[in-house]
Amino acid sequence: MTIYYPDGSQAFSHLTVEAFEIIDYNATSDDYYHISGDKPIQVAQFAKGHHLENHSDSDPFMIMLEAVNYFKSSAYAFTTMEAQLGSFQNTLHITIASSDKDGLLLDGIPIDPQVWIEMATTHHAITRVDVGEGVHSLTHSSGKRFSAFLYGQRERTTYSLPVQPVPGSYQFIARAHTVEEALTEYTCPSTTLSIRGLFKTDTSDRL
Picture 1 (cartoon, one colour):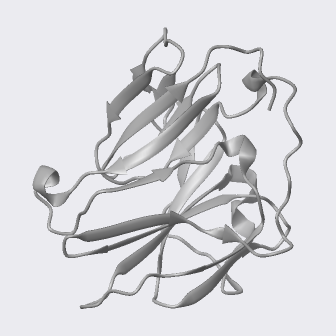
Picture 2 (tube, one colour; picture 1 turned 60 degrees about the horizontal axis):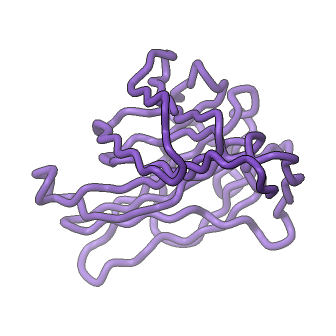
């Protein structure tokens, strides 16, 4: 397993991984990563709490990241979470092939983020877009598949969740012939996190 920075340099490399071994990688805030393995891996993102980061707008959460070859849909719908007191600052993190990034629409309006982070090792781009409270749609004008996660922060409270495909728009992925053909490439949006990979080296199974 290897973790790359956007410019293609290595942030971490663990050449030999046993079956079902768990690897921790403590990432820095505001960095982006490409996580790659030559065998299937499962990657979870853990956000640290304010007691570890000395940051009041932080609370632990865990989400399972999506491999770039398993992006499901070109149309998503999502709603932000409500807080009992105050409100969340909500941010949408999007990963898409670099050649397809111009067709993204948020609530029918083209997305014009200030910064796209280009991943040199995987030819994908990542961006963050602030969204207001309420229900939203996220689509691609040319039907290109992409991945998106919603993050929210307020004082000592944080959440994250994957946005869900619009009913009827889900694009099923053809089954891989071997486990080596799937679940090997991930990109990771910036946040304070640690990454755990679950590895399986037995290639006799079929997906």
